[in-house]
Image (cartoon, rainbow, N blue to C red; front, side, top):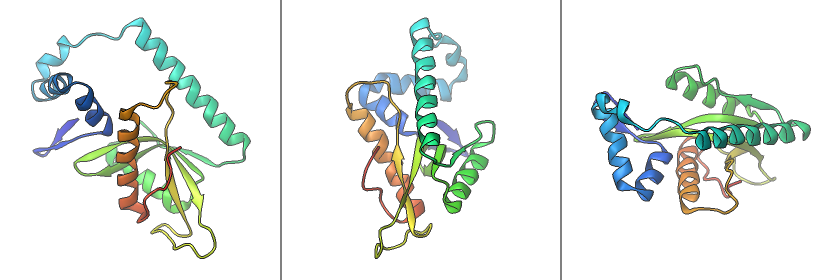
Length: 174
């Protein structure tokens, strides 16, 4: 979450954090409102570092599989500003890239980064999206063995943001 020009902006992760722990969500907001409290946050531990490393490895494995299937991938540049990432994401969708990695989606007051947007070609007779004869579905990468409610909420948020762009609600999550 962040405050921009007097308006709060939230990510789907902020929403799921609130679902899990209103207190943790409040503390995160406090760190934004009063930055001096940010220094009091717990530092990263070895387990979290290991999980982050495994998550990156899993994403690399998924991307290698997609490339082996002949898919064209576009990685949104994390070094860009949020506005530039949003623009780069839109341009990739308009160009019809097969898979967009870390696409920035936004529908204020929510914004965030979908692990993957997967292009879906329309069947003959299916109405075009705002993008053309295709649309995108949201795909996510998790290390968990079981689906959790917060994953579904997160994907629903991304689907709603994506629907605002393409004019078609994704039918499936991947």
